[in-house]
View 1 (cartoon, protein in one colour):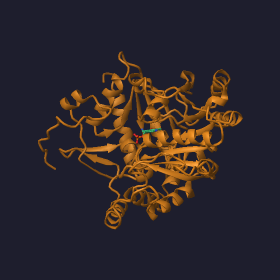
View 2 (cartoon, helix red, strand yellow):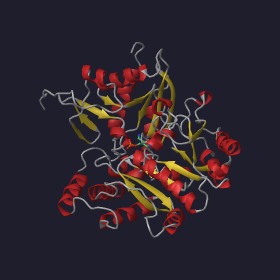
View 3 (cartoon, protein in one colour):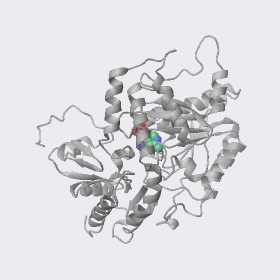
View 4 (tube, helix red, strand yellow):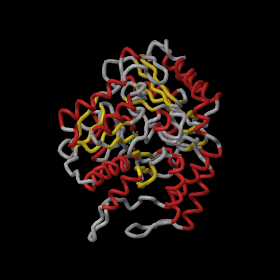
Length: 438
Ligand code: PMP
């Protein structure tokens, strides 16, 4: 590979300090397995599965072939009383791995679209059931639910919400479940189910009958992997049921084997009413997302149909895009044939051994993890987030891609990662986090 002169003036990069990027560009030109290569040909191990997208590793030929084939057969199919057969095939395949009862599926192209679609579906459901006053939502401090307006309203990461007030919807936030006293807990903390009582308090304060839904990431991902305390999700389920509130799990990161089960809902034994998913649904190869809802939710909304309009005035040009459906079906095929959800469950202990080997390094403040997902919280520096960015950069220089969020790293390699590659990734983390001076 040779370095090409690139004009970087025109692309406004998302979630990036564009000026800094222009000074110190970090680019990926090629990927295969659990490796990226820079345009200069330098090899970088992928410790974050892209952005938790590429669970089956990069460059999967099965997906490339399915996409190429589909493009030649049916490149696009419209909505408005039209659909493509492949979309039904995918919805059926997904319902086969989703928790029982979650078997009606609406498609979009991104996690943010899935979240905003879920918000509208919850509103439509309550309206159909004769409770149009349920327009308020509950989410959690430190939550990330995408960046469309609904997801921005739900955001508990305040930086993602602060500059966009005036256009957001009514959301009340519960506490997050992280606790300083439980640092270095491997798997689920034993104590903390009581934090779910925040939902009860909110219902009492605002009136449970005004609340449409409560959104949570079963494992809070984008803040740096916060695993729910034992019994916490169960308690949320109980309180939501008591007040007739829909429980929504945002499984955009936790879906498709990341926790060791197909979805975190199954891993933790709690079934939500609505679930959002994206990223690994196509192994990151083609944009796609989905919202799965319980049968009765779709039925209630469908039964509310009037003669003059469809029951849900919502959908995207690229909902259930046939090429994305083909990519997703090929991806599900890989997960099944290679037993990757089971592999994640069995590799987890070696993975977490590696993560927890970082415990006594000078820059490590906390370690958390479950399945093939972990958070490495760095000791705080003077400016919040500065250390996280610096470490992300140093890891890149040493040949490891790991996403930093504030002062935490989200280390979550592909479910296909070999033990040898895993140990190479841990070596790089040890090297960088072990230096007294960063
Ligand atoms: N929800 C969660 C839990 C996420 O982690 C993300 C993305 N990191 C999103 C929603 C938004 O997904 P997208 O970036 O595809 O819009």
